[in-house]
Structure formats: C-alpha cells, structure tokens
Length: 193
Image: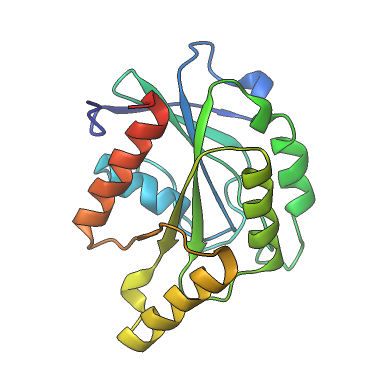
C-alpha cells in the first residue's frame, strides 16, 4: 500500500522533457483553473500547504511533481479556461500538455470539475480527449460542501446528462471517506492493483 503522508515536492517542470530523472508511475490532476486541484492534493497527503492554492485562476503554470512514498508521482497540471484577467490560456495548456499524454509513465488522470457550475465546452472536450486516448481517469466533483440538497441533485443530473452513467466522487474538505476512496482509486490506477 502507499502511505500518502510520505510526500515530497520534487520539482516544477515547464514540459515533460523536464520531468524528474527518477521515473515512476504518474497520476496527473487536471481541471479548469481554480477548480481545486491543489486543495485536493493537500487533502490527499494531509498537508494544508504542500501544493500552493490561490484564489486567482491560472496560478499554476508548470507541471508540479509530488513524490508519494517513493512509489508514485502526483502531478499538478496547469488549469485550462480563463484567468482572472479574462485572458484565455487553453492554448498555453495545450502546448505544455501536447506531449505529456504520450508519456509512458502516465497511468491515469484525476479529472476535476467544479460541482457548482454547468460543465463548459472545454470540460467536455477534455473528457472526450482522455476517452479517445484511452487514458484511465477518476472523475472528481469539487466544492460539494457548498451545495444544498437540491443543488446536489442538479449536479448529479448534470453529470449523467453530460457524461452518461459514470462513476464520480463528491469531494469536499470535510469528506474524509471520499478522500480515502480517491486514494484507493489512485493506487489502483498507478500500480494496476
């Protein structure tokens, strides 16, 4: 098993060519800017400030590698969508990630979506992309603690209408059970358990 509390930030890389020299299975966290990738990584490793979180969309601009228990990397990727200034940086995301998905060490993607909003065209395009590439993924809906029961019901309907009958996890800072289930999924993907 993997001990997620044994974590170390290794490096930030502008491209896959600059990834750590020690090659291990990688699980990449991807979603729109400000969806909560860094917050989820911090929750998984039980550290409040390991991965930097920002209220400003578009803060992560590099591939950030976190080594877990000397066995796998969690890779925090730049978000796609709009920055606070209103400039779209999906193109920058595409250029940086262009070769990343042909990386033989990539074992899966944690695909994050904000539960409070309708899914965007960018979300749907990325979902189609990982499906077409046959990349295993875990779908995580973030910020679920900010929804009431009626909004949660709408969120589930939104997921099924957009992606079909698909397994997904409802993540929030206070949902320890969900965090443990996401860890299990990551281990299964990374080590093909």
